[in-house]
Image 1 (spheres, rainbow, N blue to C red):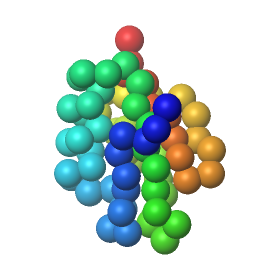
Image 2: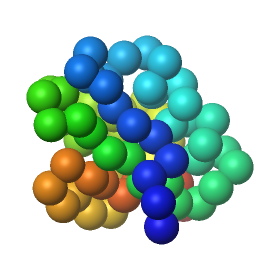
Image 3: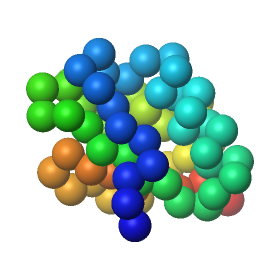
Length: 67
């Protein structure tokens, strides 16, 4: 599975959270990847999106829709 969302050097913004929310409505599972110099906070990206963190490995994480 390839990443569907890329988090840039600004970190988790409102646009990123909105995109996660909209992609979780269409798909059951999405993959997010961070740049090396971006601040990484997995819980910040799923808060308020209706998703849960399945796994985090390196600079990538997999998010699934809550059941």
